Amino acid sequence: NPERDLVEIAELPEHRWHVGVQFHPEYRSVCGAPHPLFAAFVEACTAYAGERGLATEPHASGRLDAGSSLATVEV
Figure (tube, helix red, strand yellow):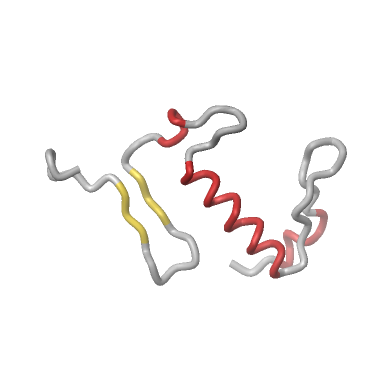
């Protein structure tokens, strides 16, 4: 924010997905229309899981079952 000399967003371009924010994007999200920051995060998580052959589709219960695959995820 140039008016207040306040950094509101910081990212590490060399990192796969790293963002820090000073504002509250959750206040600008509603069911079915998330803030673009959340949509980008979910997209990055889905791509990461897909590259590793992990589950990316929810079960009929509406929950994503990672099963035992969480033990093998490298961060």
